[in-house]
Length: 266
Image 1 (cartoon, rainbow, N blue to C red):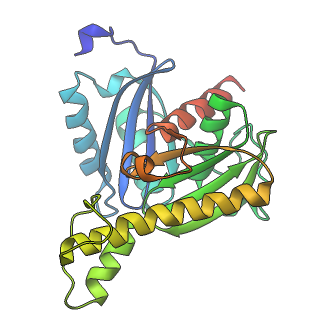
Image 2: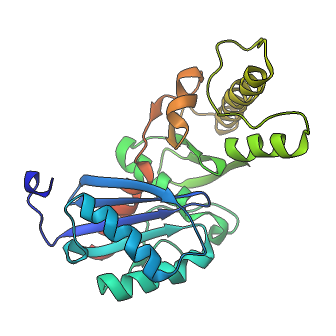
Image 3: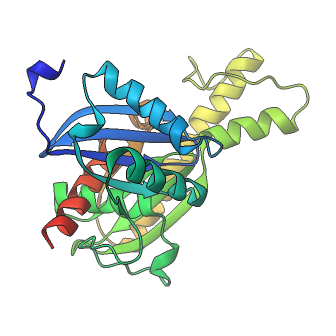
């Protein structure tokens, strides 16, 4: 594996910590060499995370000494101390953390910029760098976020809705006779059994939610923004959506790389 791209010491580890999953990526320059998705677990210690990452690296012929720098986006505050400890103990690095004081290159027009989740800013930076136009970014995570970026590259704001996983779990927990089902697109919306009925409500209901919010954001912005979807379920929802134009599964990782470069060179 490693022989195909000749490992160098100039590797960048990017880490995006979400409430449900943590996504890691390895960059050499602008090339994403490897990426992994693991469960976010606040109870893991520094050493346990080190063991997990060491095993992922080993399977890809990587080593901790290959990492030059680390940049982190985190929406789970208890995880920050763990990851900072990991970087200090195993990478001998102080990580770059997306938050107040870090250069993003993007004006934040939110009433209180500190309230905006780091992942939302990272996505916005990556999308505007790539497309250079007005955008709506839909990120399917534990929560589903909708963010509007102006034609000038300003983060203006957006909306937050419960994620699909939250909605499905709430239905199972609060409705005694309804089973927990796998999320997938059913054959039809007029379903003929309970499992397909739940899937139809979740899937098509969520497609309607996405398209409805995007259309309202378009009307408010008086603009024709490009709609970019990212996150774990983007690939499943996008084909049924009438508003999603592009799917970019690595948008957040790319944003972390861009923000790292802006701060490293500064």
